Image 1: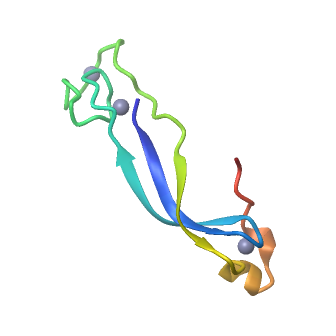
Image 2 (image 1 turned 60 degrees about the vertical axis):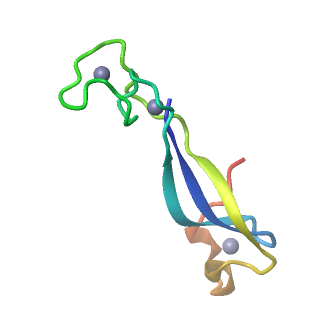
Length: 84
Ligand SMILES: [Zn+2]
Ligand SMILES: [Zn+2]
Ligand SMILES: [Zn+2]
């Protein structure tokens, strides 16, 4: 099934992942609602079609040796550490 790949920057000192963009990873299955190969583009009522997306995958495209902007501002409570 499809999932999103979340591109972002990982800050090593504070373990925060800062989201930059999301891309759709298409599984190319005809029975997946989220795929462009899905055979029922409008009004799918098939019970055999997949209606859930898999958990998104974090893709750190940049690794920063510095703390993120929120931690630098002294307010780390507003972001959660990267769940792995
Ligand atoms: Zn899919
Ligand atoms: Zn369908
Ligand atoms: Zn941080």
